[in-house]
Length: 259
Image (cartoon, rainbow, N blue to C red; front, side, top):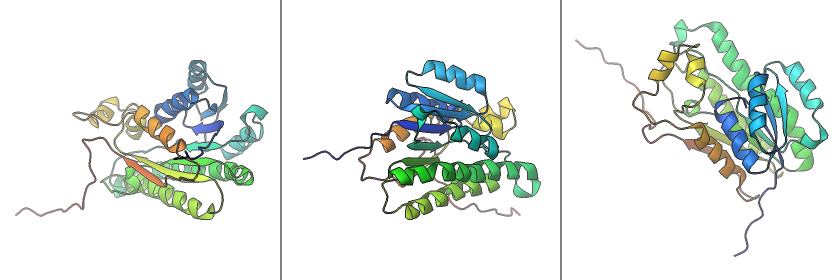
């Protein structure tokens, strides 16, 4: 049986690269021989990560919501990091877990700006080059919250539903090209700053999320990314949902009045 050709991508751009899934993915892709563009706000953490990796790395210390600065950085990429062949849209956040009528409006704006608008903006900057070269892979880090509701998810869940729909609609637009798109949807995950950010630095509350549970690790998601990228060139993984064994999809919730 003849083996199918695999994509020999060389350059990957990872957003939110300074910690969690982004950092773990940088390590995995460096081991696979990728040259990496590491994008995050905290330059000191990016420099520390760069020193740990064996392959060439280019740092972009920039807030992904600063689109003007982001565009300037992308236009100034060294030739060794062009073209971007893999885009890992990992940067994102959840803020708060209050019911919708008790939330902070600014939190909603920040989640929409980061998880939707900035993800779409960066994709729009990179995608034309992929189409022109007829090669590339966009992996969006969504969430099971984009499919399954839970109390307090409100706008966060809605932003991840956007990521899911954006991903599958990109696939429709890219039909006829060799460019691939995947929405990777992790469930409960530790080893990231997700819950600490959600609860605005309240470490005690963040730790309670994981009590008695063995959650996914950032490395688990990074290995899933490696597997997705290693598929034969004719294969597109549209959507991959992953949860820890101690988590399962939930059903509708019923509130009962107790007499």
